Structure formats: structure tokens, C-alpha cells
Length: 64
Image 1 (cartoon, rainbow, N blue to C red):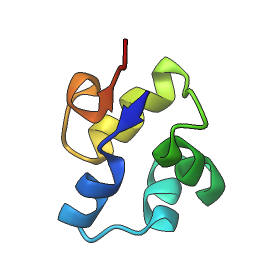
Image 2 (image 1 turned 90 degrees about the vertical axis):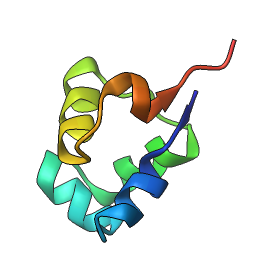
Image 3 (image 1 turned 30 degrees about the vertical axis):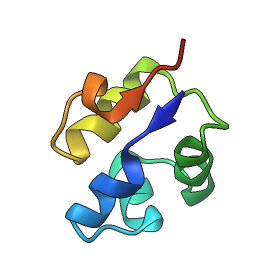
């Protein structure tokens, strides 16, 4: 699974720490999500998508 988190964070001038604070996780969690090394819960995926003003489908790219 890949994400567009880094691209969308840049659009809103958010650091990993900023986004982590908004959604209530550690910065490392955001880092691992961006690298594709962490599969978030549905709640966390929803919270991140909402913070970045997008949808879960637009935020995450599922590789077959």
C-alpha cells in the first residue's frame, strides 16, 4: 500500500509532527504510514483523510 500523505501534507504546509498532533498519534506513526510500513486502523485512516481534506480512496493507493 502506498499513500499520498507526503504530497497532501505539503499542500497544507504540515509537518509529520503537525499531522500527528491533529490526529492524535506519534510522529513516527505518520512516518511509517508514509513509507507504507504501517497499516492504519479504519479510524486513523479516516482521521488522516479528514485532516488532509481528502477521502480514504484518494489518500491510499492499494497495490494488487
